[in-house]
Amino acid sequence: MTPMRQVNDEVLFTGAAITAVGRDEIEFLKQRAGLNRRKRIRLCAHADVTDAVHEMLIVHGREAYVRPHKHLNKTESYHVIEGEAGLLTYTDDGAVRQTIRLSEHPAAGAVFCRISGDVYHTLVFLSDYVVFHETTNGPFRREETIYAAWAPSEEDTGAVGEFLERTQRHFGGLAESHRGRNRRA
Image (tube, rainbow, N blue to C red):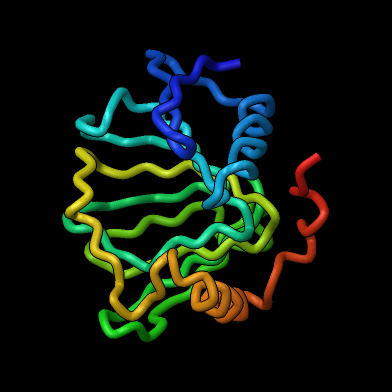
């Protein structure tokens, strides 16, 4: 298995010149995501937050909430490896601009998506786990992530639950074809 260094409960780095990820690493990450309060984890293949290119293998559980946000001066892309998710983009005042179903199966949705510019967006997870590769430009600066004032904060669990239900409806609810497939053992 690829060696990993833990930064916190949600962030691991490989620190290797060559990072290879297979089934063992994915299952390990899914297990770790399931144990986290926010049901997510990322394995960073870049050396640190100052790198010009950030590549991460990310796992989110269905219950994970990604507050709608935009990044200043960033481009990011997603490549789905396992599961299904919905990507929503929004206008600055919170109206849904676009919805894109992301899936490991090209017949069920896009396997790849790229977001350029300062666009509010979120992901909603339609299968028990979603495993995806995210690439973005660095360096990471927390102050360059702008959270939407019209979206609930993570601490407001009731509003977050309602938000997740509402956003999942844009995609017909949970991914039936993968509901049992991505469950933890």
